[in-house]
Image (tube, rainbow, N blue to C red; front, side):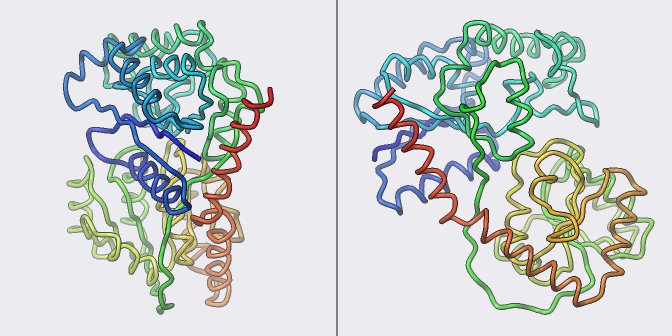
Length: 386
C-alpha cells in the first residue's frame, strides 16, 4: 500500500505535528510506503491567508506529487492556511480516494477551538454564516480575518467541498456528534472514530506519592487559573510542568504557596517519571479538547486522571474506573480532589490498574495501526467497487 500524507505544519510545533510524525513512523514500520507532502505558514503568511479559498500553488504542488508518487490513498491532516481546500480538488481531479483527520473545529467556526474570551463559544454551530464570530473577532481578535475565514469555509460549504472526502477521522464520540449534527451535511458513514496513540516503554513500578500532577500548556483554555485558585486554597500538593502565556502567574503562585511547585519545561523522560510517582493527573481544561496525548500518556503509566467534564475527556475517562470527572468550577474541582484524597490505597491502586487497561485497550500503537489500515482498506475497496 502507498499512502501520501498531507499536512500544513504549524509555526510552533504542537500535538497535531506530533501525531502526524508518529502515524507515519507507525505505518512505515508496518511496511507501508509513505511519503509526506507539507505546506507551511512560516513565510508569506498573509498571502497564504488571502489564498485560503483556493491556493493555486498548493493545487499545483499536490497534483505534481500525486502524479509522481501515485498513492493508493491520501491522508490529510491540516490544510490551513498553506494548503487550502485547493488540495481537495487536486486529489479529486487525480481520482485518488482520501481521508481527513479532524484535529480541531475550524470547519465549524473561525475560532477553530469553539472557545473565546475565557469560555466556550458555540454560536457558530447554530448559524449558517458565523456572523456572531465575526462581530466578536474570535480569531486573533480580528473581525476582518475572522470574516475572511468564515467566508472561505462558507463558500466551500455551499460548493459541497466538505462532502467530497471519503472519510473524516475524528478523535472522539463527542467530536463525531458535533460534526454529524453540523451544517456541513456529512453522512454518518463519512465520519469514523480513531483516537490518538502513544508508544511508551514499559517501566518499573514505583511508589506513588500524595501529590497531583499537571502537564501541559500554561494557558487560559487549559484551566490554569482554575487550577491555581483551587490549589492555593487547599492543602494538596501539585507539581506543574509546562510553558505558556500564563507562566508568570504560575511562578507567582508557586512562590507564594508551598504546596504548588512549578517545574518548568521537562523532557519526556522527566514527565514519565512524574507520571509513575504522582497520585493522579489533573486536567482542568475549560474548552473542547481534541484528544489530549497527556491523558493517554498518563493511562500508559497507570496514572488515573481527574478531568473537566467536557468534550473528549468525557469519553476517555470513565468515572469510578480510571479517573474522576468534575464540572470546571472551583467548588466541583475541590470536591473532586477531596474525593480522590479520601480513597484508600487499595481503591487508588485499582484505578491505576484500570488506567493501564484503558491504554492497552484503546491507545496503543498496535490498536491504532489496525484501525488506520482498516479505514484505508475500506475506502480503497469502495473506490474499486462502487
